[in-house]
Image 1 (cartoon, rainbow over the protein chains, first blue to last red):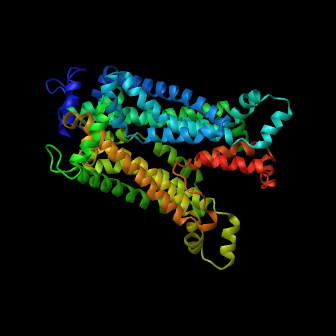
Image 2: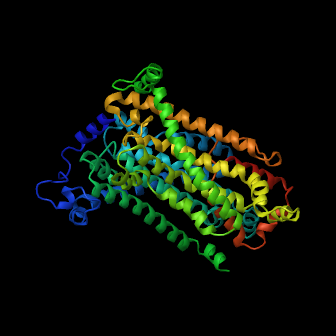
Image 3: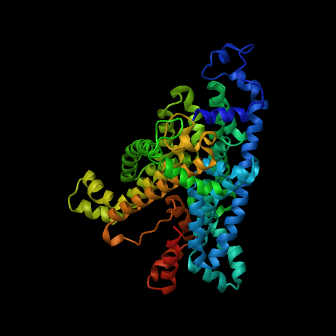
Amino acid sequence: MTLGIVRASVLYADKGPKIPDFGKTSDCVKNNGSFCWAWFRHNWSSQFEPRLWEHIELTVVSVGVGFVIAFVLALLAYRARWLAGPVTFVTSVLYTIPSLAAFLILVPITGLGRMTLYIPLTSYTLLILFTNTLAGLTGVPDEIKDAARGNGLTPMQSLWQVELPLAIPTIMAGVRVAVVTIVSLATIAAAVEPVGLGERIFDALNKGNFHTQFIAAGVLCVLLALVADGLLVLLQRVVTPWTRARRTR
Amino acid sequence: MNDFVRAFHFVGDYWSHHLLGSNHSLADLTVQHLVLSLKAMVIAVVIGVPLGMLLGHIHRFSFIAINVSNLGRALPSLGIIAILLPYTGISETTVIIALVVLAAPPILTNTYVAIEQVEVGTVDAARGLGMRPWEVLVKVELPLALPLIFAGIRTSTVFVVATATLSGFFGGGGLGDVIANPASFGTYGVIGASYVLIVLAILSQIVFLTIEYAVTPRALRRPLRWAIRRAPRARNVEADPTRTHPGSGAGADDHPDDPNRQLQLEQGSKIE
């Protein structure tokens, strides 16, 4: 276990300034106080902001790509129901692979690079996005589909104008879970490559358990997940005004 | 690709022999992993089930009970561990707290939904038989809710067994010791320990599916499925479209014998 940390510290050796700098910093940092605001404010733009953006990038790209793949698979499985079983099986197996292992396994194959992180992160979104998209579509009552057909809509029109909009709440529920899951797993990605907010956490571990850095990085992770979740709830309300109408009735 | 084969040899070689630079074998680490997961699960169940039962029984605070699950899922485990580290240090406690934060919300929400959705008529009948409120809860609502409660515990267990790997970085022991340490054990060692972890995850699924099946009242039993069950929230949301169009929800129930409807239900249940 200690060797793992040594290895990580070698990886991170020349990244960023050494902190805490015991020579000229405040008493709070010297004594490893519970949270040094001044230090955090001073280092926010150099150490935390870039990592936060990396974290957002990892999440958005993984969920975005995962959504496109899962959406296409769900549409296919909606037309050919026999596909649902095999796709669920494969994505479940992918989902079962421990994240840390998935990152490490890919290092010899794809090398140290973003692709090594994107492949597992994307594959973790597939199960939930596929399941929810398909559940949303199959959950549309037959009567509504009949009504759409009765109004002269072609199957394609019915899918895009009636069935998919009605599936949005379930699909969005899946997207929310996928996003917060990936925000969480992206922190673990830092064990393999110094990227995202997780890098700050492992870095603090290497620097003699620097408390301020632990708390700052941890709180940023949690806030990122909560804010992302909240924004998606807002987005869902905007794109599905009819669900809100039901609530106020 | 060779590493994937070598990993099997690694598991074979070190399952009962001590790992290099350690006085634990893979079997020891597996047991540690299970014990760590079990501790977290017991705490999570002790918190989640009674609270969910209470809230479900009094039919209040549904907003909290349902959204706590979303909130809990949104909290990154590593972030929680980082926030806790200054207070609880690099220890098993830190990891267990983070695992409980992960595991308790789905259990609470599932228990709440399970108790809450017991039919009013059933509860009224129980009251009519002269049962006291706690008797209604324990003798009527709880048995009907057990399958869904165990589904929640199963979901949490899968999360916990996977996330307990993080303890490799934070001194909690378990399979994470190997998985977080490719420098000592090589990629094949990491893969080997992951094989063990995957087997653990699948076995825990099977165990809980069996329990779920066993506690389901006979009349309500459906064929065993191994896939992950959709969260109750997803089912509620899925019900939304039917409610937005008055009459359509009732229409579905008007023709329970409609063969197309039956077919759709069966196909729908497969993907859960």
